[in-house]
Image (tube, rainbow, N blue to C red; front, side, top):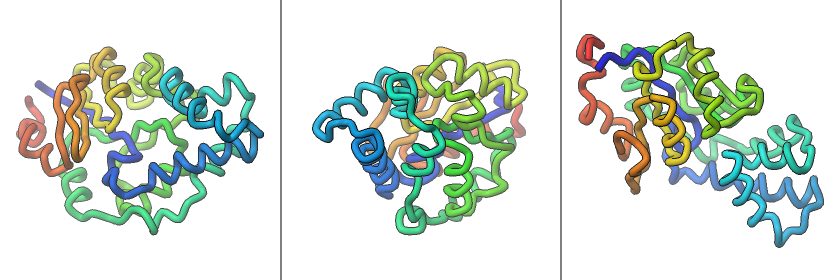
Length: 217
């Protein structure tokens, strides 16, 4: 199989889920909902869960039901000291740079957060660009339109030539429906929604050596 493009998720994919960063972001989302929007504190966890499961992100639900100020929300939830959570991994950087395919970040976060994360991980310059929630017009994975737009922005016309690496089973299910080859990256679990499950980036070389074989499939 000839792959030309790899889409990488950002949070809990480019760095270990054990870092605690995503949990801290979720806590900031919860605080935003009761501090800034005045929602009942006891209702917030249920609402967050419902919005995430229905729309793919909490933000999407808050946009539709509460008219949230997007800039205020994104700045608030990502206002965290990244150095306390995530650190560069030279092995991950080396592996990503060794891939001959075009590489894109494809995230439901915004570009400002993605740039900060990539800088902190020493991964700036490893990707063609960032396809973020703003560029997608606030459509997000796993909505079908998100994958269509990702193909458009990456300049790729054939989803069968694309790989998507993500830590979310629902996002990967959407990618698989769109025609991508999907890889679930999780240190502990495996996914029945994806074509392949790996536990760390080094597993990619072991499980898919074809990616380095002159890129001829």
